[in-house]
Length: 263
Image (cartoon, rainbow, N blue to C red):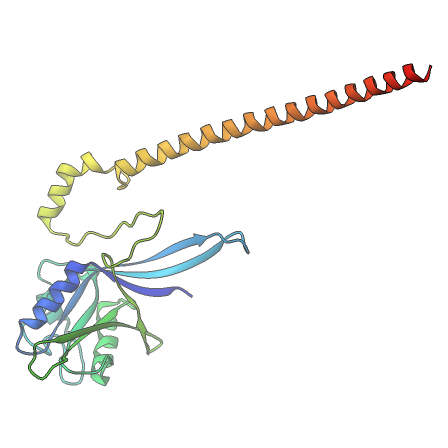
């Protein structure tokens, strides 16, 4: 079974926290991004390869509602027309979930939040929806120190699972690997800018040109190294054959000397 993970950039997380800190009440809204499945193959000493399927939810942006219970009623029924009003210029297909910011509460979904989540999945015809919960609290009575906790939830067969949230620029780097994070903005200005300047830095398949050049250099070095290894192997075999031939000649010389002394 695929392991679900939520990923977001530090900018998106910071905007969520900033919005909540500057609000007098709890906040909720919709989350935009993309969900995908990635297949990772790892090789170890015990087995040739291990295929690991990961279900990734990339959070790219969010839109806050003007007030609570904007797109659902008291019993959790979701209003599709209100959702369309909240979407504005955003596409409905880019909605991957919703979020709620609650003060001084536990990191657990309420019963109504679970009902709203299931109804939202049904209305948007998207079974892969996440719920992001942010719960700030005061650590000191004077309010000088605060703590902000966040968690993501995913429902499987009406069972809600707490899934990990990874911030892309907080240590989420792997050795010998390049991370390609989804664009944090899909606005028209962003797209036009990327089309104008993207050809200078990216290839037609979306990969970095510098990375392709490094890969080409690495392949060239590998081929040269393999060629050198073959040459060394051939020279070692030649030395081995010559050593055996010299040993045989020395043996024959010793035998001739021994025969001459016997006579």
